[in-house]
Length: 502
Image (tube, rainbow, N blue to C red; front, side, top):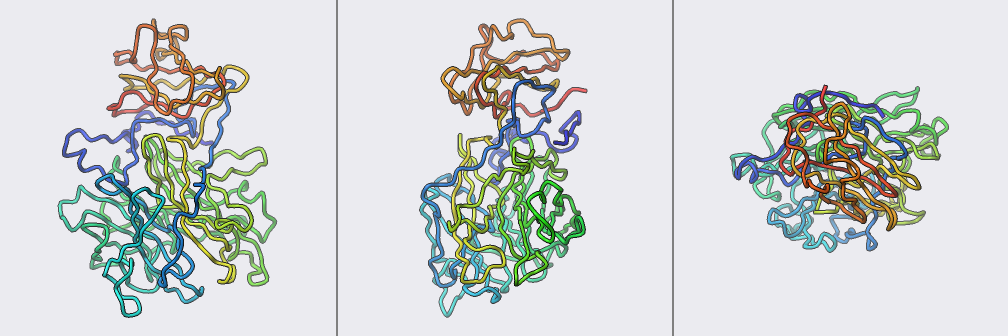
């Protein structure tokens, strides 16, 4: 992976955003997944390591999937989350803004739909009384401009002073991306100058970054890579959602993506869901493996779609994860077995949800491939879960592994780790070093109380110390791992600056 090395993350807008008053805490968006944890999905803070291996972890699909199926006339046979799931503002239950497809491909009567759930598994489709369908408003359609409305990114915006602007939505309509506001996430009012973004393709996902106070957009853009036409990813950002700069191409398929293919088969990127997460950025890349068929000899239109992970430290420059032993990058949500409800295509919400020690991700699955006949298309919504910060871990097996961080500035208070032993004998110990790498008195491996077991959030203690040194000097951390997996760490719930020393 490319190592992003800069001395002050604050200067590039990737410092941790934390509320400093009751009012600021009240303004935290329901979309906000930022926090104090440093993940080991990349080597950003790793100075050196021995006898450890980075292991990527896929989401675990819910045993009762799909959790929601198309069962209304206005949904046809196909629903999926080209959209957003958020917790209720009260914290009791969930809300889903999802997408319906027509019974017959080509008719394009897309629907933007709304559902609620108390437990996130059993979903209800309330009668909203807003949009008429076949003479009745007894349905859960919440907005309808034209037949091409789809792929909605809903953002909770409690910092907006107007009661009518507590939710914002960006979605593709017939001629670009439309901006609309809502007081409740159900009743929406378009801005007068729509579309606010006309460049880029019809698949785009948007998010809010509470650290930079910018809206980010990741939209589909055509490009030519190794002489083949592709769908790729472009980026745009703004502080004013009424005005968006033209998107800039940022991610194209590389040689690793095409290792499976013989031209004209190719890999494309159908979409990209990217979002701030803890102290960095994560992205769900929709990998589209397209291949020639009798209906499309060019090999551009038909194929399967699944999801891979990408990582970033600024939201614009992205690293792809390392290939597995088969030479290909592993899926973070793989396709289902042949004939399964999610065996043809998978799409995700624009970001997951984090609940205590678990990540919830809703996704749309389809039996058919992208350009399959309409009779082969049946789409539903599923749920997948992952350990908190569990996208990747540094693992040691059979021998003691060691990970030493770069010199760190601003780390104080209790040191917390997300760690799991592989077996009953596995453990984690941590040493604290000065900037030059010398062990600080009282913080050596012999003084550290070993952690043994499964700890999504455990405080590290030493014999006579239960917190990091109070000194302002930079420190390094050296983690010793025996038959275990280290996912992430943080220092102090209110630590607000994470930086590497020059």
